Amino acid sequence: MKTDRFLSDELQNIHSKLKKHLIDKNDDTPLFIFNEINLSELIKHISCEKIFFFKSKYDNFTFLGLGHSQTIKAQDLSEYINRNPSHFLVAAFLFEEDPNASEFILPEWIFVSKNEKTELSIHKSIEYKNFSSPNLFFNLKFDLNLYDLTIPPWQSYEEFPEHDQWEKMINKCDMLFDGHELEKIALSRKKIFDYDEPLEPTVFFNAVMSQNNNANSSYAIFYQMTFDKAFISLTPEKLFSLADNNFESISLAASSPRGVTPEEDLAFEKLLNSSDKLSREHNVVTAEILRKIKPLASSVIVSELQTMKLPYIQHRSVPIKAVLLSNIMPLELVSLLHPTPAVGGLPWDSAKMRILELEPYARKSYAAPIGVISKHFSELAVGIRSALIEGSRISIFGGAGIVKGSAAEEEWIETGIKMNPFLKVVNHE
Image (tube, rainbow, N blue to C red):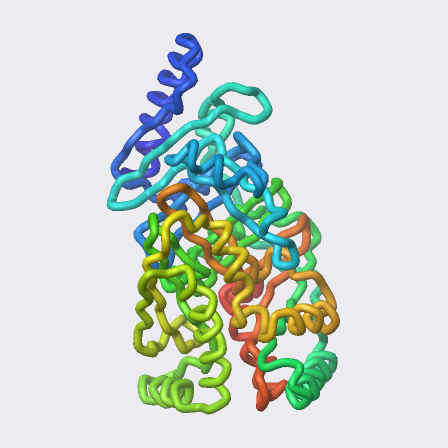
């Protein structure tokens, strides 16, 4: 369905049916089904504060949640989704936070697109205890042609850590490898850009999507918490999906650049697949996922090594599928798998302590699980390749897996490449 038709025709129909629900005092969840709507296009016309957009890289699944209907605490999650099997909840964790201390959000308006259909379910507002009308979420008089939707030039820039500090961090890791405290650790850095005026999160997200034409090679995630704060990720990494008892994950680690020519690209791919250092970096991730999943599974299938080619970089990749034993809940899997050695380290207890010591900031949403949870289908990505907008400031993150033999300069360049989807927008490339 065309976006303009949904906005001009279908919203009126929805408004009428919501009024009837209120008059009849009907507490059932209103449900509407349409031909597939382009939900990323719809974001341009949304005027509400809380927005969660999640487009899967691996499944035919796109989610858009607007507003806030309920908050569900972690200890109540299993009971809630068993009691409400059709409800999708927003799951946005923090890297340093215990998943079992998290909260989950049921949006008011929930769009789910799959199999060429879009389903809209509507839930009562947590604030008003009633169904919110369309005008609270959509500005129907908004004319995109009347507004300057470009990103302004940034005014100041800084990096954490700086180059010299990064080199010291890698040297410190070498000592930890030599002392057998760590086998692997993932370290991150960020670039911070400040502006003279607040950034508009939806405008920035739309610019990221339009300037990265290969966005389908990654998840596309937009989580606006308030009008001036949003987390955006174009991550290639899947933590897991769970369709009833069918589990899928991916072991993704180790990187090499993309080549300018097909011959150069193939040479980089051969290096990626033959390098001892890169093989070790990836193999520990695969082994750790399998170690944790096998006790919960009746069967496990590990695919052959693949190369995941993204616009700026390529990775070693191994898809993993399993049939889990019954009654394995999504939160249990988050607690078990997060963080994988790809974004944390091995052994994790030591890596966690060293990340807190070495990185000059808290990661928060960066590299944390983010996605949707429900009774019959859940999918969570790992929020790498990301940016955080806070008022007139944007922080752009990149990380790298560090093992014995990692070179500080090479990892500095790699983390910079991983920031490219956002730097293109910031630098108006």
